Length: 105
Image (cartoon, rainbow, N blue to C red; front, top):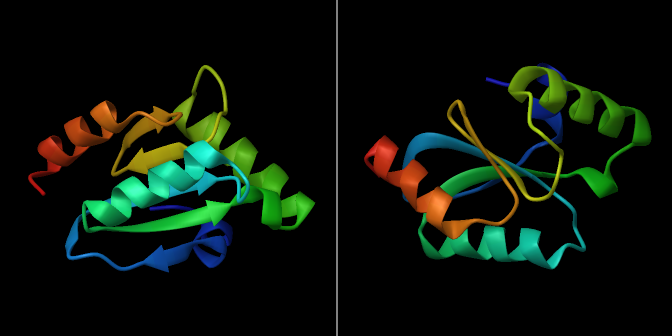
């Protein structure tokens, strides 16, 4: 789904709901990002995450370029949630619920 360099950076969190591919791009110190991870954990969703503030600056640049080119968001903000081919920018549990409902989880 993602280029190999992102696949290598992503850390997996297990959950019993695994019918969708959730990947979140976060900042390790961001309270909204922490809430997003907590929300996914409470829902039992399997997901992967990349804390972009903890990776090498050249990798961070590649990640941001990829997100901008692939998803064409109005802005890059965190958490940046990718579920299958859908994107939610920022912490928005209502939108996350919509994604779950689309996937039948």
